[in-house]
Length: 107
Image 1 (cartoon, rainbow, N blue to C red):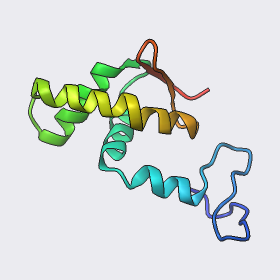
Image 2 (cartoon, rainbow, N blue to C red; image 1 turned 90 degrees about the vertical axis):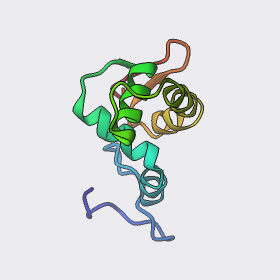
Image 3 (cartoon, rainbow, N blue to C red; image 1 turned 120 degrees about the horizontal axis):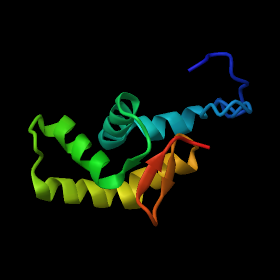
Image 4 (cartoon, rainbow, N blue to C red; image 1 turned 60 degrees about the vertical axis):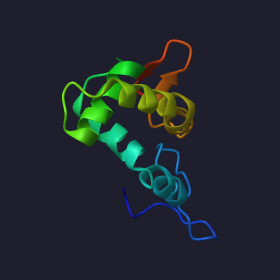
């Protein structure tokens, strides 16, 4: 990310109107191995994508096995749906519709 972001008094980057994340938010996003894998998968594939496809790709990336173990895909799917995708969506990094379970580009 650009190092020329305005700084707040607490030392974190302010969002500058271009959609850049604050430093604290970047650290929160990248602190999770699962979110790092999600971002890597989404960077390499076209959107929109459904939740099960993303979960399967994340598990394949993590385990190196294809097809991925079904139980692992279910576990990751639940974690993505309830935790990771809503967080990434709230930060404007992607679009996620929990009703249709579709991931899209951020608005």
